[in-house]
Amino acid sequence: MTESAAQLFVSSCEVSEQEVRPARRLLRFDPATFSWEGVPVQAYKPAVESALAWEGVTRRVLVGASGEPTAFQLRYFEIQPGGFSSLERHDHAHAVLVLRGRGRVRVGDETFDVRPFDLVYVPPEEPHQFLNTDPHEPFGFLCPVDAQRDAPRPVGQD
Image (tube, rainbow, N blue to C red; front, side, top):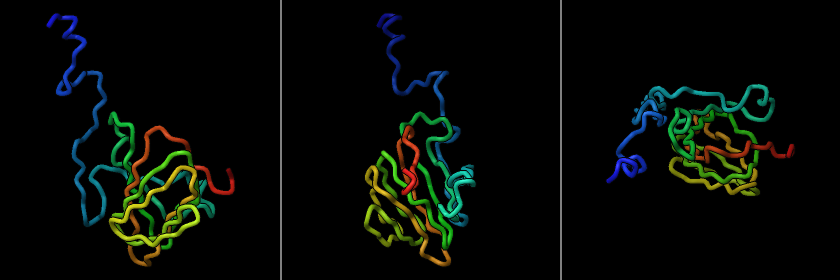
């Protein structure tokens, strides 16, 4: 192979010095705290948006916020007892995999009671909301979405 041809070919095993790499390849899960080591808990949305729109929700971005070269983000949301997410819609679809607790999910005109390992598909433009129905345990779920996506629009304000 000529030197110029070799410069064009980069195997998948080689890493460029300019390539952005995640800080970790493994995030250890701690079942006692239901959290991942080194992943900060973030506000669900800015506090100014919380007035009657949502309550008791936090999020953790597991993949896609630390320089990983992905076209998606994998997020974990947790809703405290009595809490709920905003009723919103957006252009993109996403799927939600329940990991913890029990809850109620509104998607369009339907409402579903969900428990661990249930999967909920939310089509584009469908209003949706998540509510923790368990008085004692948090309701937690994974939600992968496109890294580049439109912002959610509160239902009734779009």
